[in-house]
Length: 454
Image 1 (tube, one colour):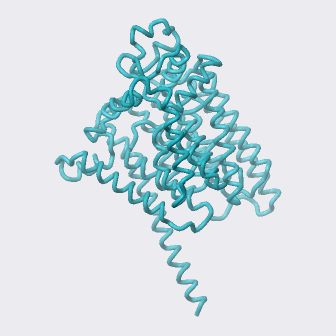
Image 2: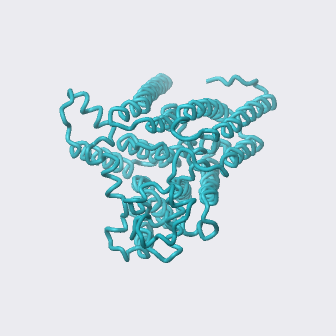
Image 3: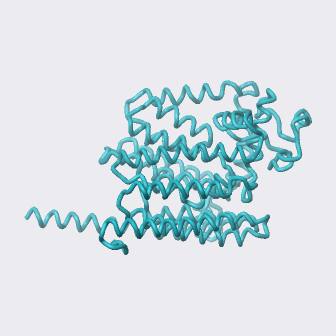
């Protein structure tokens, strides 16, 4: 695809710089305007604003993918990435209240209490309650914490500095800085321009979820990128440690194990296992099953047992005329699918130095599609892969996840089905077009090579 910019390198750089600055300034203004949203009544207005930001983001990504490497462009990317985050850092979270649980868990640990032992409303924790954090903790009346040990360590260390929402969000942004650094290092090692980190750093979903809501997924993403970088540098023990820590923040990074594991190597799995055991040891006083916290209850609450969680299963049930398709059958199908892809990934020969990144992207994306999470921030971990696999289908999948906030106005199974349809149907169509185009390119390339050999 031809660039709309002039062919002269200096002129090209000038116009690209102007375009990025205009998009950056406009996006920055929209972040500030977005802080005016309050409660459920403003969610549709907020989603319209986010849609405008997504369009600007697509423009910036399209431009940066066609720009020649330039240090000045990389500086612009980093500058606006910082400004976007600072513009909403000091405001209370609007689209999620999970961060209040983070602060609470840190406070409980500081009091010498195992965070997996009590629900926040337990009378024994009454001395820890205040009027800023405690009243805003979700599920405080019935749910113990759900967050694994590495996340708990982050909460504890952060709250020893300040038991405030702003400081917890600042911690997440510090981990984001690590992720951006690791992505820039990876890009450079593969001969790609560092400025492509814009694709992660300017993504509206990333900015709102981490600078706005302070989701702990930022920690998981930072550790995933470090694991990917460690794999690139053949530091197998470090791969195991960082992947284990990522899994002990949010469980989903575990699916990347087959990609990051080198066949017949013992260092990475051993480091992974030791890290998991050591991380759980301080919390085992509540019992080996209780350290799972609210996870079993959360699984039930999110409709895993009933099958309502899974979009593909919902589609299958509609296609068979309303007849019930067992949830167990779908779970077996999902497990076999992930196992098959994991096995393929494990035994696939490396064609390029960055092949493992693409396979990781495939596993991550398939996991998201099969699981079909009900919350937008679960899609955030796909954003780093966009820097290396900038497919329109993946751009759409990550950006379209914003529509899940429409569930504030209703989250019954039928409503969630149509929200998920708005995400996954266009994604599937775009992916189909991309696969068809790739197949045609391969056929044409093969035909050309055959004619040349003749």
